[in-house]
Image (tube, rainbow, N blue to C red; front, side, top):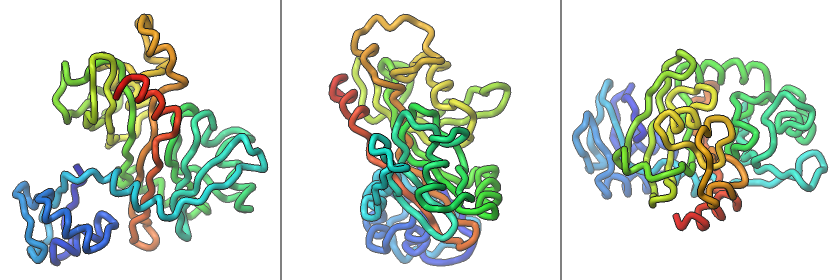
Amino acid sequence: MPRFTVKRAGLLKDFLAQSLGISATQAKKLLDAKKVFVNQQRVWIAGYKLKPGDAVETTADISASLNVHAAQRQLSRTAGGNRSVRYVVAAEDSEYIIVNKPAGLLVNAQANSLENLLQKDLKNPQIRAAHRLDRDTSGVVIFAKNAAAFAEIVKVFQKFGVEKYYRGIAQGDLLRKFSAKFTLNQPIDGQSAETRIRVLKTNALASYFEAQIITGRKHQIRAHLAQAGFPLLGENIYQTAALKNAVYRQAPRQMLHAAAVRFINPFSGKILQAAAPEPPDFQNTLRALKL
């Protein structure tokens, strides 16, 4: 559930549009659907006057709205002339570029990484990944276009100013133990960690979920799910029990996809956001599990 604190007085509709990066019409639809709360009270009046310090929340599916927004400006590029590796530029401004990474490709630290491919394709050796995804995790990654942009986005991450949403498939029925929305906050490697889970669909075999990570620990979603007793499907590190079900063994990789990302550009003050649809192997696995 996206949460925002009001800094300047103004109208609720305008605040929603600016904070979520949506149009005034879309903001009005959220209000009409009664999906907006101010100081934990439901508000649906577009002209409601906000004051500094007010807490605004919405129960809208932000990643779904980002999917529509990002689809309008996706651009495919063939990486480094290798037609077997493709990535999609999902959003871009003067300082940052958000790219949809395919599974199997490293973000950085190797000659054939996505970072290196971007540097070559865009003829900009200063491009640098602002964060990482595991090799077998697909989805959106933020890159800075120069050293100053990288230094500032690091600060944004340190202040938990980047919203990141994932889609994944866990082994087993999460609703046997949890409600449809729950939080996992077990420490990881001695550090605090928080993962918010929303169950999208489930059956006896598996659970399709959305996760928002508040902190950014290594393998956070994977570790938290394993600690809870519901390892990610295709997991190869935190999987401790034998995979007796053949459907589990057929997973082509760890079933985790970085679905959406959103932050305020520290230079322009404008929202940059993007989303990526689940790739075919993920969708095929959902169908195999009848989710």
